Image (tube, rainbow, N blue to C red; front, side, top):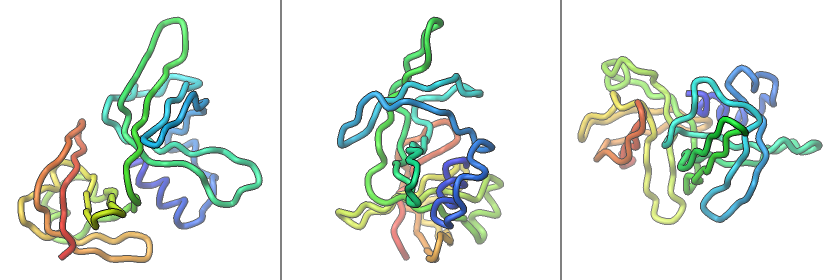
Length: 172
């Protein structure tokens, strides 16, 4: 939910005024590869992060109007009593678009009607990252993102983490 809200703010150009309210934690990037990065966090988040949780890594670069960063999943977590937490984050491939779900599917699910649409740039594949209660095989769901409306057919489930799941969808 927090990643969805922050991506909407970034796309809408609302700047950094409300970042602290959504759980920003200052971190130092330890390394980076084509598939992800590792960070040392300045404090322990509450509640504690979980493997598979979505993370938005955003650099605070002074003088830049366009944010730099990526959306990913937490894949490694190292914590000790003596020092700060270190995390490994795997980048989500493709373009990530925050969407708000609507229609009968979203109403019936009784969960937060927000999600992230992951658009693969290589093969025109789509994955909806949303609450598990949204999924119903072969059902259509409407979604609205910044500047675009979508209509999906849910075709299958992917990875599940906590209350979030990756739902394979086809554009209808």
